[in-house]
Image (cartoon, rainbow, N blue to C red; front, side, top):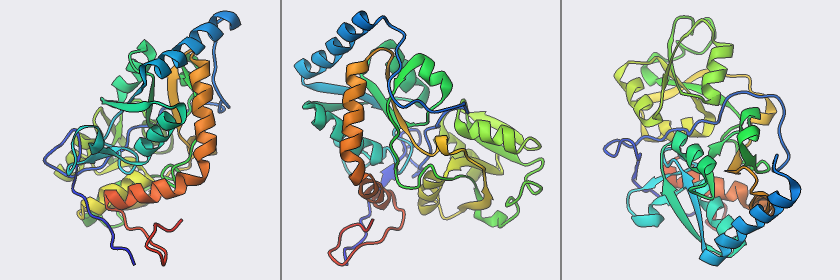
Length: 305
């Protein structure tokens, strides 16, 4: 049986502490989009869209941005440097997309909010950082088809200090509780809607949020299940509270954000997503293993699906 790999991982925001946090997945919305959305006139859109994809191919580089503080989706492997230090499911997916297009991948790390701004302004080609579909995003970006990283987004949960036991396992137990969530995130919306009697505090950086939890500033933090597992795997003083949010199916997948009107590039991304679908579970299990989450292996020493 293959030995479980161990890599020391540092959060970008807190280099001295191993924390794994979720890049937020966006606010609630109505219904999912199947592909790119563009308000540009067809002839203009086609020319501009093809031009962007042609420029990427001519330059030989695909520039993407992500916020590498969201294990097992994107995070930092401190044993590596340069572009190789960025690891996780989204990083593997980004490499696949670049290879599918026939170019090299260039990762430009930045904060979650800055990722969106950079795509909107056109300073990078796309962002792949645990984004959920929202109606608002369809108005401002081209949205790829869904992709699914294992069960990372299947459940949205609360994490708390292990010493709290099941104190915060129910809605009644969470009345008046201090809960932290990332600003403008799906987690913020869920907490506001389903735990209205709690005291919600927002933060920008989730690494800082986990540190605040450990310092007692919060009773709980709202996170995606997979991210919560990664945090707990590397912080034995943190545990699942036992509470789970009700989550609409349309928020259980992730999407790639591209600049509005870049339809040809969006189509290429969707083709790459369709082509790589059978590998998603393996990529996710491999990312979990690197991040410290317990995984199983088959008789040949490969990650079991």
